[in-house]
Image 1 (spheres, rainbow, N blue to C red):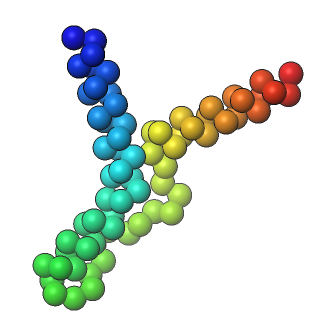
Image 2: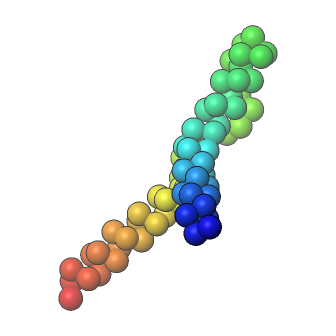
Image 3: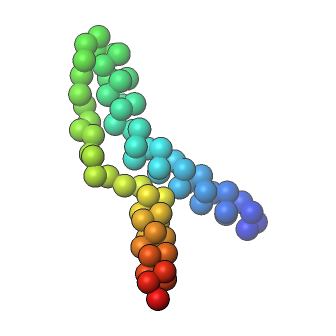
Length: 69
């Protein structure tokens, strides 16, 4: 049972990361294909970060704090 919960959490993190970075591009390309011309439906946020990106930044900060001691 724990194994399935871990798989579910990992799946959620991967989906969140892919959607954050590639979701607007996918939506805009599908909309452009359906409309037959270049269409922008969703604005791409340059500063958006996924949960994995935030966790990675926190780990780097923690590593720097521990190396200062």
